[in-house]
Amino acid sequence: MQPEMTDTRASAPVPRTAVPKTVLMCRPDHFAVTYRINPWMNPDLPTSTDLAVQQWETLHQAYLAQGFDVQLIDPIAGLNDMVYAANGGFTLDGHAYGAKFTYEERVPEGPAYMRWFGEHGFEVHEPEHVNEGEGDFLLSNGAILAGHGFRTSLESHDELRRIFDREVVSLRLVDPSFYHLDTAIAILDDANIAYLPGAFDDASRAELERRYPDAVIVDDQDASVLGLNSFGDGATMLIAQRAAGFERSLAERGYATVGLDLSELLRGGGGIKCCTLELRR
Image (cartoon, rainbow, N blue to C red; front, side, top):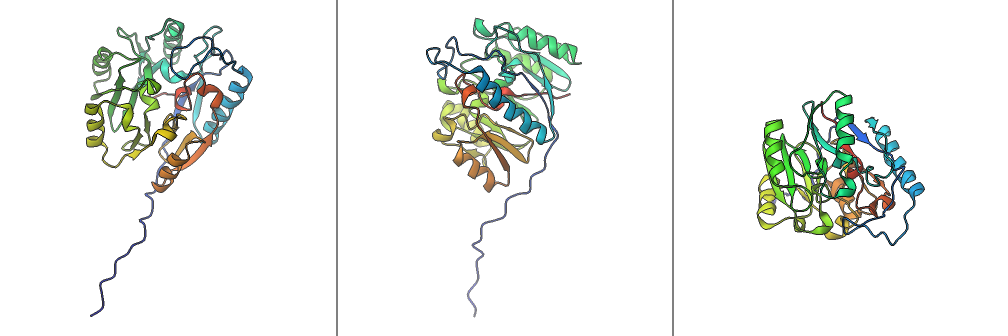
């Protein structure tokens, strides 16, 4: 009798399908680190606005190369962090939920983004509670993953439920270096995510494990360069080029990657996803 043969070859990656994306961005024409509102910022170290613009432009061009519809909001002098467009609100089903920032330095961004939403056809909902938009609200498999603990209040999650009539999954962030949800979770496609377990409390981590048993787990080294602060179309992920382990994990799952250097913008506490607000009509 012939011995039973076992196929030990690794299974082929799952084919991925790109989904068209429309995003809002803001050129960092006024970027500078002149105050400290997160652990990444150090106003004692000079920053280069020119370099920030150059690096941002590589992201802008990469999105255009992917076929994204990229829309722009005009930067406003004195709003150093307006480049981090993700924090400007959350859009879904033609509605826009505005941002109400934690720190006074960023408060004027909220009305600026709400004006843009209103001028571009969204039904705008002015927030009652503190929240920092898509920095802490991520759409996944029809539900809204919603962070709280540092920049967004738990009460704002009730506003999300009322406005969008979607399931809202509250996740508590506990590491000050990962103060927004989009620094600790990356949306890979409608059903799949990557995340850093240590960024969450025990209950939130257990909920992520239950919902996403096959999630990509990212280590501290890749997270420390904001590797999870990435964005893609379901087939290609744009990620921090220094997040080598994350890149390998994505390739194993069948995702293409584009590695970018946004190191100057990282000094303000943001990366690829922070510079990107998805527009959903």
